[in-house]
Image (tube, rainbow, N blue to C red):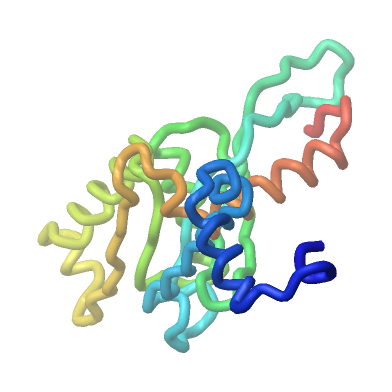
Length: 192
């Protein structure tokens, strides 16, 4: 509007100087900085076979009935979600409780189907820490070494820092999708 009636030399620099000194204008015109996305970890970008590197977490609880009878007892079950780092494929296993023995049974079924992973990533759940301890003692014990023979399976377990669930974003997203889809399909029904 000023330029329509008057000719002021270098008006843009004058207006910029005035608006940059105004705290209200600076606060309203401020654009929040866009954070740069960090590089993906090496395990996500290196070539490997499917399910060689996996992230594990539990989804649930879900309700299950013992039998098809009308007054059958219902109990809680959980779904162990194994997410492949290479192709983001998911492998689901039903787990009856949140104990180390129940998780090791689900992990045994996973290994029988998909093979032993080289790297396992999870949070610091007590069942995961207990499973890591039991697998480590099994591999390092003399009985375990004689049963394995010359082939030493290399399987290392990596834990997220405590209270840092955002470290496992890949498998937390898979848990969310799994639980959302299962709850929508199940509705009010209880599976046997």
